[in-house]
Length: 175
Image (tube, rainbow, N blue to C red; front, side, top):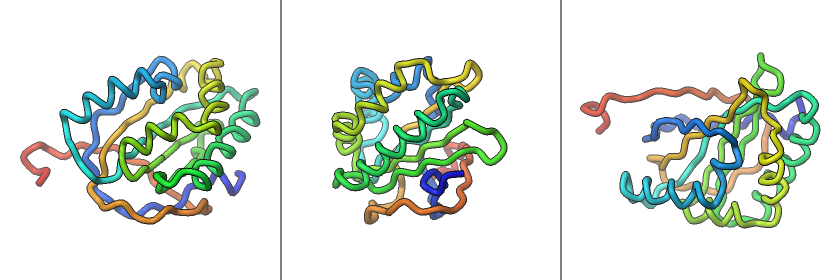
């Protein structure tokens, strides 16, 4: 694996997450229209000054792998270099399923995420997602949420390992 794509070990944080969104195309998850709809929904659910994050999983067609890696590395590097509102941008590949990737992006707030989607370095990623790069069984799944921890400092790209787990806490046990 390319070291720039390896995940950084993440601190253990309890998060309050919405149910994952399954989308017909990954571009919809990050498109302006989807953001407007999602924004209204999340504002009603929880207004917060905690970091805003997205987790995504998807599988890229084998013949699009190199193109994907070049584009996502460019987005990752430029985001961390040029965006004051980004905290972390982690890209990782599944250790057992080649071409299955995970993204974890964390921003100081939801507005910083929206600004990210308006940056020039985001455009190649947006165009890529609209070009049918995903396998039939690798339809993107994304979850947007507010973290329960305070925003930290921007983190550099590092190699390491990460665990991506989904769980739901019973409503009567959340606090």
